[in-house]
Length: 457
Image 1 (tube, rainbow, N blue to C red):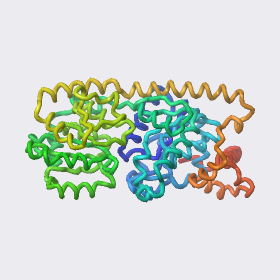
Image 2 (spheres, rainbow, N blue to C red):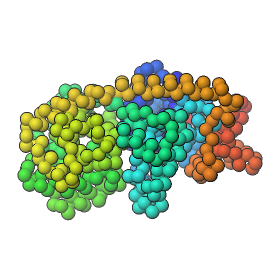
Image 3 (cartoon, rainbow, N blue to C red):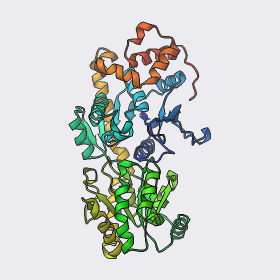
Image 4 (cartoon, one colour):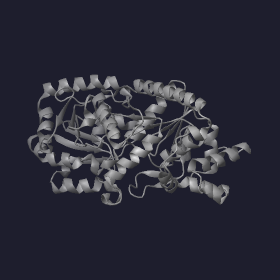
């Protein structure tokens, strides 16, 4: 199959969506499929660093979260090139920017579309004018509208699936957890002397017990709750240190907070690290801690477990079936209990060893190979069902999902690339009243029939 993955975030950014997209592409290619990733360009990368079959679109920083980038212009020759790839299926990993592009191509050319819902937006509305512009209810409605366009929706956990049904999503939803490359994190694959060297480069000594957090340094990750529990930990365990691997908009605020708590000398904000090296940073840790309840799956939990680290996490539906309290990790409900949980593992070597072993064993069940095969099976079912329905339909316009008229204007405003194509193609005014998908379909089809334009990305 020719598969198109559309995502607003990808390497060099390190986050769950980028990791999931990378892992999926890798596994699908190993199964013999042609996979193309469409994502915003990132100024950190030079053109020489671009990966094959990763198509980088012109982008700008997202106005509310500058570390993220969004696509702004989709040149006509790129749209034509995408059409020439003869995609059998479109898999969107985002509801914005590139997700809109994937959605429009699905609508324009009758290509079946699958969507993975990665982000619980109700936990992120505070980024948009402190929640005054976009409300939780609006986030739910937007998620419902986008998901209901897809032929099939993928949720990484039962928590996400339940939330989507509560939002009003009517399409079939399958729970498929993202798998990970176990070998990348397995402790036996790392040299102890190299780990010690890395540990010292971070300002840590060999005897230090490292409480680790890996991920985006943002408000919804609740790192402040961890900091609140650390004074009690540091008072009873002199060798304990807290290491944060990652970057984000809340970093400076948390650094100041650690200083106000009088613990900044034992807290290290190391910043973001290259994805290719992230496995080595898990080896520096002794315990992985998270107080976040905004996760859709929590890939870092599984990565930590694959590294043999006991995980301490706050009780939330996202960890059900992943972290079993007193088995392969520890779970806390009240924020004030986090310090006692940390000390429990730091001081009880026998318990630490048992939980560490069980954590490693559990991670083996979430391999990337299983993930890839599960998605491949779903693709085949969707493509087959789509072909049967399309054969029974009178034409592609009758078959393609039709958005409610009131939603067409919303799509037009958000999908700025479609307006750009209208202007560049000099399409007549009467055609502008058509749906965005029809406009793009007309433009791309005309250019393709005429031999196309520039054929390189």
